[in-house]
Length: 173
Ligand code: OFO
Image (cartoon, rainbow, N blue to C red):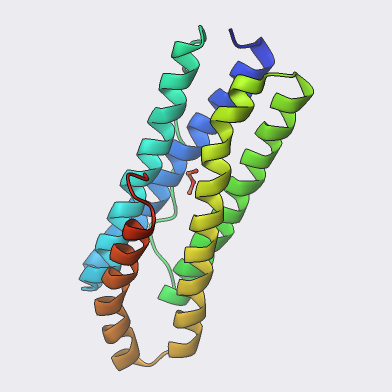
C-alpha cells in the first residue's frame, strides 16, 4: 500500500513523463516538417518510450492501492532555431527528469518504501542510458555545426543509433 506522500510524488512523475512524451512529439513534428525523416522518427520513438514510462507508473500506482492521476499538461515548445538547440533541450530535459527520479528514490528511502524503491531502479537505469544517448547526439551535432551536408548524413545515421541502442537493451522500453 502506498503512503499518501509517495502516491503524490509518483503522480507528479506521471505528469513529467506525459509532458516528456509531448515535448518529444513536438520535436518529431518540427523535424518532420523540416524534411528530416531520420531525426523525426527518432523523436517519435522517444515520445512513445516516454508514454510507456508514464503507463508503467500508472499501473504501479493502481496495483499498490493508489489512484493514478491523469492531469492536464503544459504545452511543449513547438519550434526551435536549430537542431543544435533542439538536442540541447533534449539533454536538458533528460537531466531534469533524472533529478526528479532521484528525488523520488530519496523519498522512497525516507519512507522505507522498498517496493517503490525497487520499482524506481528501472527508471534510474533508463535515465543513465537516455542521458548518455542525448550527450552522444549533442556531441555529434556540435561537430556538424551548420553544415547542411553533415546534417543530411546525421539524419540518415541517427536511425543506426536508435537501432543499436535498442539492441543494447533486450526487452527494454
Ligand atoms: Fe526520458 O524520461 Fe522517462 O523516464
